[in-house]
Length: 468
Image (tube, rainbow, N blue to C red):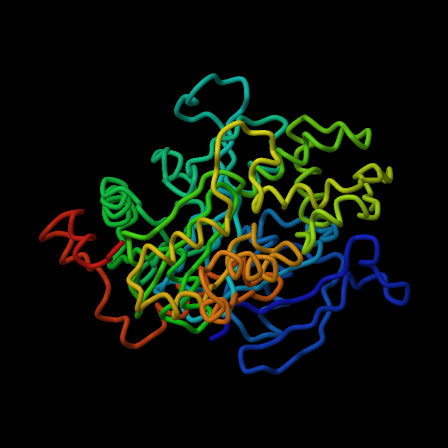
């Protein structure tokens, strides 16, 4: 059965029709068998009426999600316009299915094995009232995930994942529990496949395993490397996976489904967060000063919408046309060549003014290739798979391919170089998609770490089942 019945709902401004004041919105339902039904929601419906209406039309049992968050029927108000905006889902009960979770420094992507896309995207944060110093006392009201992020002005935000690795286990458990029970709405599942970063310390792997079995009582568990899953999502089992996200970049060679740890390269500089910071430093050149935490979100949005990778930086930096950006208060500001200078630091790290020598992203990629046996060079060069939000910039793949071709020692090798650029949002979800595909394979059934194995050998059993 499909993961959800998706319904596009009008924004609040256009929610009520002129012809019928009793109808809040026309809704298009796609049923699991592909049938499409057009229905409407009464304007005076309360939460229970809404559920009865939707479930009656769809002949479907489940629960309501708003913005990825499960909503209790009693929490819905009669004026649904206050609640509904953009995307409404009526989800099936997915208990006893496989949960797939991609744990990122910025966001957690979660859903179910075999589905096409994650049904939940949560900010990887836990928020506490700013009146508390340090770790809040037990019972202090807290907000988790995206809700905490949206309350950043009044909350102290804790990020339990730094540079791809869990560093705060107490808050990580809070975040995972929120995703399982509230966002996904599952009280149990048949197992969970979770991502982990390359070179994840053994202690981290064991602690995560222990938490899944002893705190969440999973019957089976599996850990998989984020870049390996991203490669799987491209339909490959061999190649070079470059995963560049919010806080870290990994370059991982993979052969026949297995990573080659001796050649893995990691870079904590010039990730997505660093590029946002760099843009903040450059914007005053255009008279734009944005420094608060709320304004930082504006800078990030500006980066994601306007920045692009240049194919001829030395020429374009002097000829780049100005671009306009509309601020939240409708003020229009103008930016100039900052929009190509920011992504350029990935290829020319010295541009950020750092006095230390740092490798460029294409130099890191080259080192990964040539740290492997010569027999693997061609398959790695021909299958350079890009993933992560930091690879979404316009021209990123084309520029990367050109730079690597310049670094290899001869024309024949240069002809091998080929980058695989995912579609618009696929780079963000590549690892999750790979996990959903893997967990749905019939051959995967024998790969789980089961509760029986855990009880026999303890947390260290994860190293025998899941290779990092």
